[in-house]
Amino acid sequence: MRRFDPSADQILIVGLVEGPEGKIRRVRFLVDTGTPHTVIDAPIMDSIGFGAHLATARSRLWGVSGVIDGYVVKAPRLRVLGHELQGCSIAVHDLPNDLGVEALLGLDFFRGCYVGIDFCDGTLEVRPRHPGIPRSTVG
Amino acid sequence: MADKQTWDEIKKLYPDEWVILVDYSLDDNEDVTAGTVLAHSPQKADLRPALADPEDAAILYTGPARPLSGVMVRFGNETV
Image 1 (cartoon, helix red, strand yellow):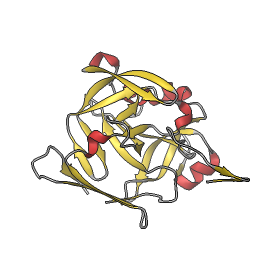
Image 2 (spheres, helix red, strand yellow; image 1 turned 90 degrees about the vertical axis):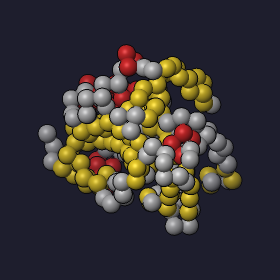
Image 3 (cartoon, helix red, strand yellow; image 1 turned 90 degrees about the horizontal axis):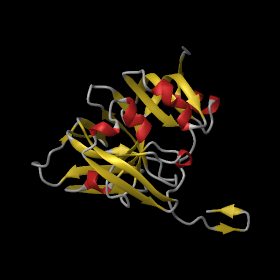
């Protein structure tokens, strides 16, 4: 379970992503179930070795401000909300400067999980529904 | 390199800026509570050179996040 500010306009959660050579970046994820895939800002991913040369697919992010093209990589480790995912796909896009966040935690992160959001206490809980899904709880 | 500062101090010193923090500390919620500012700028693109070096760093915006979409409703002078 993680705490968030229930009076803020968005739910922001700090998480960690690891690059192919073990470099680590900690960023703020905007919890955004309106985005199907988890997205991390391109310069941040590039700085840990995830350039476009490691792309497994192309991706396209639609928003009210237009379309941003990017690519998909497989990250060795993504740790958010007390859960650690290994080998998960992350879309890499140049997020707008004025967005004020470095990453979007998309719907894919929550699939197969119970998700509880308590706006009275400001807590967010993610619990795998089935123990066999490839993620581990780390705290 | 600057001294380690609390997140509250960093937000006051660099309002509405992107910061790269190294030697950062976390609380039990895994929120960043302190760190050493390696670089800062209102423009994220300015941080690209400094971002390449550290093995472990936090990249955070000190201001509020902006909505991706949505409607801001204004009643009189009040925004809700």
